[in-house]
Image 1 (cartoon, one colour):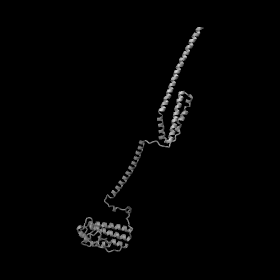
Image 2: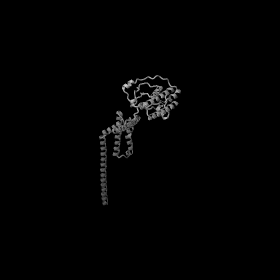
Image 3: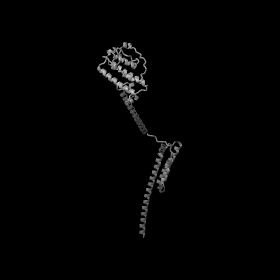
Amino acid sequence: MKDILFWAAIGGGEVLLLLLVLLTIYWWRHSAAARRDRAAVAQLVKAVREGRQAREATIQGFLAEHMGLQGTALDQARVAILREELGLLQRFAAIYGRRDAGAAAQFHLALEAAVAPYLALKGNGAAAPVDAGTGDAEELEALRRENQRLSEELSVTMETMSRMLNEYSSMFAGGVPADAAVSPEAEAPAAAGEPATSEQPEGESVEAEAAGETEAETVAAAASEPASEADGIEPEGAPARAPVELDEAMLDIGAGEEEPVAVSGESEVATDAEVADAAPVEAPLEEPVAPEAIDELLADDPLADDLGDLFDEEELAALDEASDQEKVDEESAIAI
């Protein structure tokens, strides 16, 4: 009996000793974990305290630059945000230190409370500062577009000027003076095959045409004569002769007049003495030729008389052809 009690006491002592050892190990581990948790929380609190000023500066910069807050509104928003952040950290430290499962399950509420000040912010619409590189790129692009537009306008202007120069050069290429250019009104009847008519009366137009015919014949006759036979030159300022007087002069030339009247041409140059001797002769005013006497006037052909030795056969043939052509033109003009 005593032996049983002895061994029972020894066994109970060993169990108690084992339990004591286990309890000691458990306490030591628990104490170590608690010390580690407290050290972590203490380190967290220390980091928050050391970085509080930097965090406040960051929040203030965000509110001023991105939200456009100033003065009291900025201070209130900064304090509210910082308070909620510190409260969130404190709640986390409490849950972690106490191993509070219930508080851990509702940690999202603490998070919503922390971000509430951010959601309550109301900025004044201040835009973020534009990067200098982006502004320079936009300005360069605008300058490129303006340069392209000016280049196009300059090219169009140069093409227009080149076309105008070509037209002027082609207009004056043959040495034709500017005042000799034919007007569009005069070109229209010629292109249609019709002679251009003036608005002067019929009698005056017939008289002018007859005078032009006789003057052309006189110029042709004088141009074909040798320069030595020209005795005088009619001044440019002399009044034009009447058609009847010109016909009589041509008849006198055909009758064998020794010194016919010569009209200056490009190849004949008169001296000062000859020009002084050839005084302008004023022709008497003639009455306008009646239309019924035009046929009789045109019937007088100075070339029908004997012209003597003034012209050779070739010159006479050329004068006949010119006279016939002028008659045809005048008859067509009179008919019109």
